Amino acid sequence: MPTLTPSTTSLLVVDVQRGFTELCPEELPVPGGIAIVPQVNALLAIPFARIDATQDWHPPDHRSFLGQADNLYPPHCVMNTPGSEFLPGLHTHRFNTIWRKGYNHDFEAYAVTAQHPAFSTFLFTSGIKSVVVCGIATNICCFFAARDLRQSGFEVWMVEDASAGLDVPAAGLFQAKAKEEGQAMGIRYCSVAEIEKAMKN
Image (cartoon, rainbow, N blue to C red; front, side, top):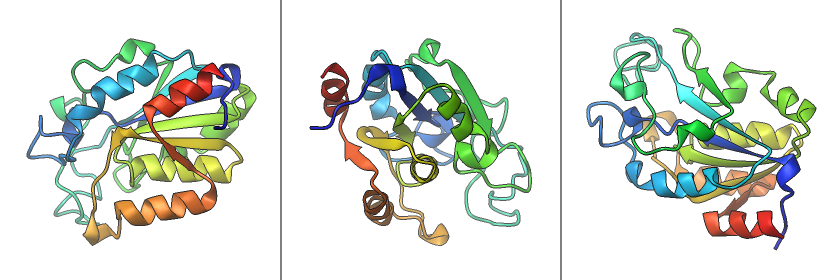
């Protein structure tokens, strides 16, 4: 079992927000979204070198919304609405930085690295070598962030039981396809227990 060094490993918690769960059924509920909170909190209890979180933060007429340019998703995680809030019970006090994304009307930003191109450089200069990723949705915003970080040279671990996924055929986004592509790139798919063990060794 590979090991992780706490002083050079960070955690990225992706879009664990009400708008991606059944708490906001009219938005974009991902099956099992609420259920991951205890597992994410278990990760948040680990002494990572730093913990970053992303927050979908859309204008009400974002291009990806139904009736807009891309016409893909129901309005969700609209800035300053209940849907944009982090899930109840999530230990947000552990976040070092919250990176908002998707706030430009004409720019889709699944990944924090798309909205904030210097994110990878920031992690490198912070001494980070490995990034643990979890959140919603496993095969969309989590995957694209993990992909970009892996392409930038980081060791990347995707924590499946602290994440929830959703197939979106209209956008060509599928859970099985994303995992296959991720594994081919060297992204390690794992559990919370495996992260806990890797960080103790």
